[in-house]
Image (cartoon, rainbow, N blue to C red; front, top):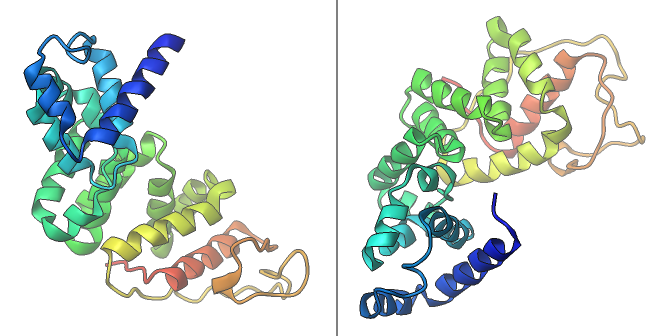
Length: 255
């Protein structure tokens, strides 16, 4: 674990790197001065600086390729399993411009157990490449390491199938407190990478007329009820409602 001085050092170097990536001052300085302060850093600290610099970047793949060219130390850090496991992998410009290259990058990071890479790769395989088993496997791996969105999507997929619905309810109950956040984030990602329109859920009849009504009274259209809390007579009705909500927000498909 890093101490206070190391944390400050990471923040300072990461800020310097982010400020100079576009004009490549870091690369020029490193090549001119091989004994620079960057070269003197221990590998684990250099990896931390790299991860911090890439964390908020909209083009992390382009940036890490750039870092590999700056010096031997950065080349080694960029190739480490730790960087592959924890680096930011959302690079939507590359997804649209070089999809095969992006998927290859995701596969590499997934092999380093990067849970966001496992999640995105799973979605691509399941919905766009029609490799359902491979996609579900990657979602399961991500979910087993605590990736909440993977649990949410996997739970909804299993809920759609009546034969796995009870298991799906158990999975979805684990993330019950994060439902609204999961729905919002997942729909944003689906908007960027999934285009197919999906089927509705088979009709589930409930005899309780108060099931699904707002706790605070009144009602809202589903598409505007982000903060609405509803009462349900059972977990089955609760997650049937959530499935329909998600389909309404982003055209969800199950093959």
